[in-house]
Image 1 (cartoon, one colour):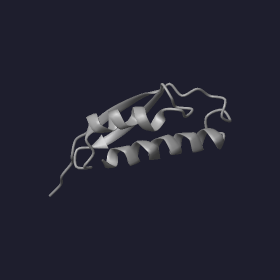
Image 2 (cartoon, helix red, strand yellow):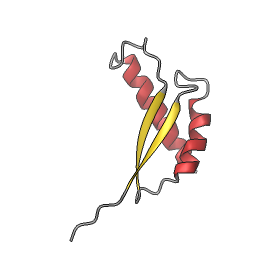
Image 3 (cartoon, helix red, strand yellow):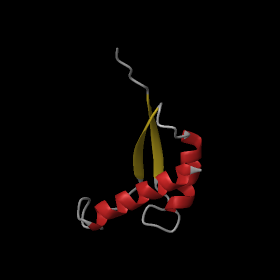
Image 4 (cartoon, one colour):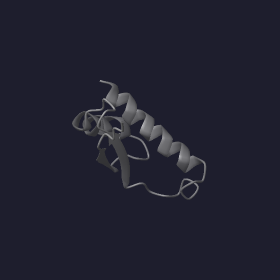
Length: 77
């Protein structure tokens, strides 16, 4: 299930941003994370949502909601 590695990557990215001072020098509390998932990305939104619970547990994102925005495919000829 590669959604678990994606969820871990999101957690690491947000925590890195917090440590780097992007969001208040690590003092900010994250309550919601938005993930944009493309229709052709090969990610199963329900699996990503389940993986989020596991990946964020015990981190500074524990309890934060993961909002998944589905992005439709755009094809041009």
